[in-house]
Length: 188
Ligand SMILES: C[S@@+](CC[C@H](N)C(=O)[O-])C[C@H]1O[C@@H](n2cnc3c(N)ncnc32)[C@H](O)[C@@H]1O
Image 1 (cartoon, helix red, strand yellow):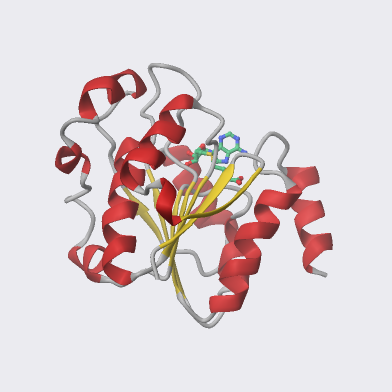
Image 2 (cartoon, rainbow, N blue to C red):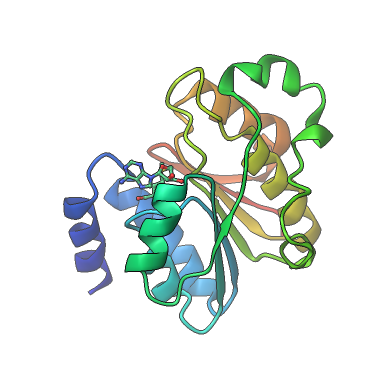
């Protein structure tokens, strides 16, 4: 059933994660559920995470209004927090030296205070040099996961910025697995 669901998602959502990448995240969330799950980025995959963690708490963070609206309209039981990322991907070369500037202090206190068991970083967009890039979401995920002894998934690590940022803030010592472009880190 779950594999069928992932295959249906792939058919309706081309160009996003692979079957193996969705499967890796789904397996860990299912094992820990009910748990606290924080997801950077909504999309056609959102209901998969809500349903896998049906009895737990799942919160999404999204910066693009069109996609936040899409999720609120189409995904049952979704909680989407609007957020603003002030970075651009090309800033990574110097932002790497001031990581605390990347902490997302504007997230609600309750989100920053929660011990998230799993954090999935698949946003903001980072496909071009002028896009926001994932420096803020990866750094914030690293702070929250280290405190909670949680797990972090970072998607699109074939891109230099995501890979370097994950190396810098999550660290090779905590890398459990890499499937296609999805990295899985654990701090517990
Ligand atoms: C890599 S996408 C997130 C994809 C989502 N996790 C998935 O697997 O379908 C990053 C951002 O692009 C936007 N987005 C979501 N789904 C999208 C899609 N199917 N095509 C283009 N952009 C999408 C949202 O603003 C999202 O935060």
